[in-house]
Length: 254
Length: 292
Image (cartoon, rainbow over the protein chains, first blue to last red):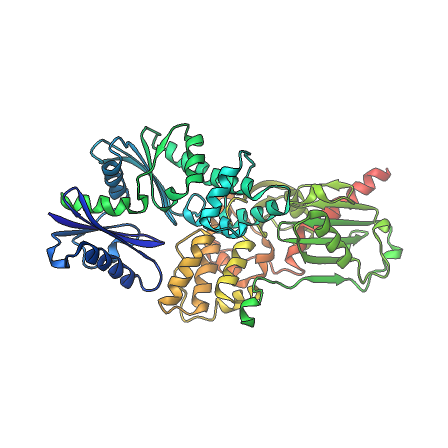
């Protein structure tokens, strides 16, 4: 059975096509311009990569913040369900899923089948989401790759007191003007969001294995900080941005 | 692109000197400096009456911000100098970093006393909407603070939040209040609390065909809703007054009044100086005590 999973997120839309347990194609489109077009482009990108047409897909399931806006899907599910299913598929020993996206963060407790047991979310505040890191990196005037490299150049834990991203941006500017190095500040930023993520995850309980998905999982500095705050190793799938779309495609498989 | 360089968050800095007072004849000259995260003020009292004040933007260093506020305040005061001031009290977020003040007092105490002086002893509830925090105070008839609640963790509901909105929509911050009423019908408040998310929400609403004014209305309404939570928790008792920079934004003030069903007292002077006024009043009392 061939299925598609479409994850409509705040920063990008991800489409995955699967045949049973096998991933046939993946495609991602940044959320620039009309959402309808972004969704269409992501889906068509995956279709052409798989070399098939829409007619050969048996079922399409959408997920993510804009799941309801995929007018051609057969079903829409929450990113809590898709994240759990996708994470357990990619890292079978997963019992806790931490999903940190551009504008939201979730912690999900699940069983060995990827079924949801409990969850906690933050979707009201940028502190603890990718938007926080973006704003801070902007204040530091650095790009993503350099930001991660900086993190590992520091072993000093300096505090970043502000919780709000707007206030933290001014705090980072003050830090730049103080004695702190860019490396120390980068580490402080990752510590700050990791602390927020860790306390959200504690609300559902931290049961190993903890798997981190979503775009922010690509930030190795964040993963390093998170492991210290959670006091446990965490796993990251090979392509954590697509985990929700994979989960949706798997749920479509039935 | 000259338009892009314009700083929409800029508000008007101000100074005032009372022409009817001759400071040389004053028995006690006291002063207060309020160094906030976004703005700094100084107020000079001659025998308990407001002689001069200044309201300026804070810089990155508290001592410099205090110095700026003082330079501006004393600029047209006929030679009044720091040495002529009998007692100077510092308050606000940067109060411990003001080198030339004799005492630092918390802004909660100063705002209570300041609001009592500015609005009269009937004021029981004060909402202070500052640059990076928002406070509600309950006062007794002497301006003593009986209870307070504060949000200093989140930019939503603060002046800084409003500045961000001004920059996003490219509307001067001082125009937001009036423009937010220039609409056909009152929209629903924006849904996101977070100022960071407000950016993508604003873009979305404009794309949906909303006018800038309507988006501004939705923001003012969201900010009003946000602070009304604090007001409801402390329970508003009349008279009610609003201080701080956002008190000058009618778009937020009117919507707060509507939500709580209580009108705020009309301000008679710059609403941002309440902390500095309170500090100067403390300064006067402390000087009297010291002389005894």
